[in-house]
Image: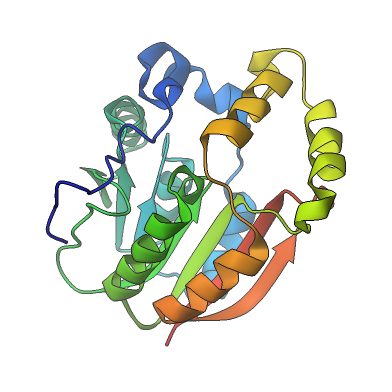
Length: 233
């Protein structure tokens, strides 16, 4: 996609903390993300020794590294150089030779080689406003082969606008006090003010217009997180 003067700067929308080396080195302890369940979903969808997977917004690379153990090619993509330094260090430690690391975002990643079989993205798309989400999802569809799968996990709201105060207050009230234990009330409030989580009833038409068929859609009990499995038409 040719860059214009009005083009969004994904790095400026990534969240300053995600670019900070000290924060990034404590990220895994804070996030406590275990990729086992999502890797099992990918394998059920056909991820295997001949597959190519692109992890957009790879963060510290836990899913990318797990997938690299079972498939031919994994590309870990993130706009944060600090995050990718962690991915490279882990890859070296784990001898992950099938893993490639690319510093780019949803709107700047240029896929090389054959189209991917899978795209995975977790808690990254919300950094883009809805206008740019729609463009990003169209780009994701183009890098996937027809029949390829998109796994989307994010803070996506499954409530109506009039429920916002009740649902959001319940969510942030349950936040941990200590930042090393997870995202605190203050951090969640910053997310709501400064980032771009959207509603399920907005993201689903975006996915469909981008060229995806939604095969499964689930929301958690908090109505704040949603998960989608989609197939490129």
